[in-house]
Length: 116
Image (cartoon, rainbow, N blue to C red):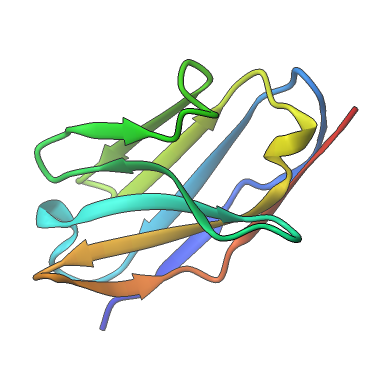
């Protein structure tokens, strides 16, 4: 079974930084694409950043230059470093694993709140 557990969210002020972590269980982490999504009130869930097994990354335009996704295969963990946070970044952030042509798992989410 695959399980994802996010951590690192919190309440910060605009301009601050946070680093989110997503710890995975299972045996396919190294070959899976990992992604961070976010869901804000009144908005659709959106892909924030993703990273393939080969290390290729992509980002939503709204976070380019501010957020960095990375992975540590030895720890089966994916990270999202968030710098220069803005109030519009406020959302529940969810970790996702994609492998074998399908989504294997979603984390429960971690709340990020950015005050102005």
